[in-house]
Image (tube, rainbow, N blue to C red; front, side, top):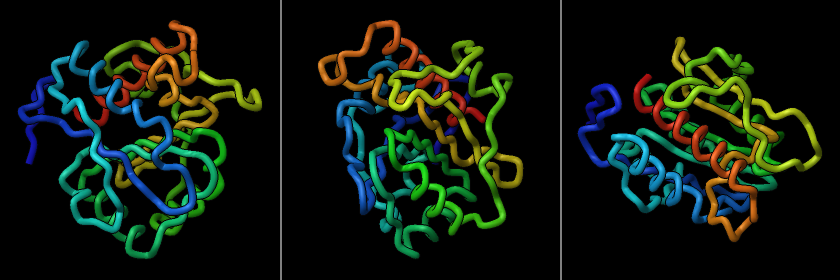
Length: 205
């Protein structure tokens, strides 16, 4: 059970990374740890400095209001994982997915199994996730990859945003230790600011 009052969270927020079959879910292991440090330094959200790794097979996912998923390649979810994820999301959970180049097709295919009647919608820059803590009039693009325009998608269940999905942005790469990708400081700062926006939005919507 958790209680949110404004930006004050009356418990220690734990950020959980989802492990799955088919791809490198463990990519950039310093990312969530560094984002947690940014949350603690810049907001009043009290955040555990270490990430937790969870499987969608496990009912412990219901202990975490925020799940993070990333990686390259394919995502393969069992029927039980899909059912647990659906139950988690329709009961108030929030999933943030950052395509680190290559998971788009398989991720969409697996989510469609959970919510066949729902579709991802591209979020306009007026959406509150762009303004929940810092103001953005654009979606940061941290890595070029094939040069496509970065996109931010949402899936809504009964009017509530339950999945936030960033594509061609690599936001979470910008949270990794500087030595990993050697991104310019301006890109890393954009990534941290938008990551904080995601967490603040997820915890206060």
